[in-house]
Length: 415
Ligand SMILES: Nc1nc2c(c(=O)[nH]1)N[C@H]1C(S)=C(S)[C@@H](COP(=O)(O)OP(=O)(O)OC[C@H]3O[C@@H](n4cnc5c(N)ncnc54)[C@H](O)[C@@H]3O)O[C@H]1N2
Ligand code: MOO
Image (cartoon, rainbow, N blue to C red; front, side, top):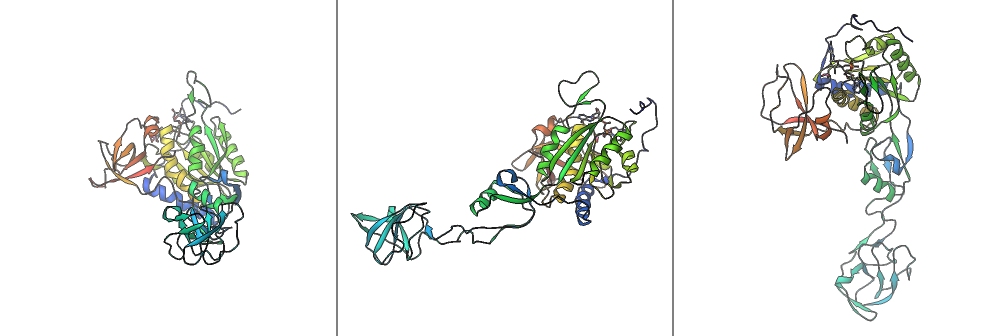
């Protein structure tokens, strides 16, 4: 046990005033993570995961079609496969998934055929039922050569590149992969470990007097997955620099961990030990404070030879903003995919929202018809706004940025 922290004490570390601007911090997070990857210190191995588990992950390598689509020349309409000029004599019926009645057609012959069924060799066109005139086994109707026949590989030739590395696996990509013969996909999902700090923080139930229910831990699995990673573990850490240092050292020792998120302990109070712990571990701190509201005491560091560390403030909405500023850009870069939070969407503000003199403000908004209406409830400790918002509007600082009636940048919220 560590001795209790004296009530009146100097700050754990001196308050620093090196805040990075918000937009620079967001860009730096991606740059630092990309540079970190290049050093080869940590990179998630390529995992071949079943299709059902690949949704949302980023492709680690380009994926090519294992099979052509369609796999053979086939009918694009229900009707009659015909050869030569009409009228044609009906010689059988071909259904998808069953062997056809004849291997090849002779001029003047027709086979009744279902959409998707392989056409017999020498088929010149498919005559849809709607255009056919039938009299017993005699068929007539207008056709053009090649009409309503899908040729092998017409949609996807075998071996064609389906999607480049970094593509986020969507339902459509899952369908495409399955349709071209894949049962699994090669993805890269950086592993993230979380340390939730604070003696007062409890993980379940109604918080008793002086206790605070953990509101950040439950946000992390979704945030991490949205950015292309996987939250491999989460631990509660009681306040204390030695404890936090030990937990960070342990997390760094696991070679599978690429990023550690520390919640709380990020500010300048007597129990805020993150910077002290990082100093003890000789971490390289790349972003130390961000000029934004909420969320300014956030940081990004790299442990020597080990994972990146993102420090999120203890206030839950400040933590969410910080996660969108540093964690999501860094993690999506580690995953080799686009950043889902910063997609370049913009909208006009549809209500009053005060700018801060020196810091960028991030305001919870609902976006309708290109207009972003502030929803309120978005102070540092309040998640009520973000919980019902579509996005965060980015309000640049008043000082040095002229007033503008133009649209503001939006930060997407995870779902
Ligand atoms: N002298 C200064 N004090 C503070 C500053 C500052 O710059 N100078 N910054 C303020 C801002 S802004 C924020 S945000 C907080 C950040 O605090 P920490 O990251 O050090 O976090 P704590 O002090 O541990 O907690 C702050 C607050 O949040 C509650 N908390 C903590 N963890 C959780 C959790 N997992 N779920 C829900 N709530 C949590 C904690 O009980 C506190 O109420 O510092 C300000 N102070
Ligand atoms: O991060 Mo604090 O406002 O900025 O809660």
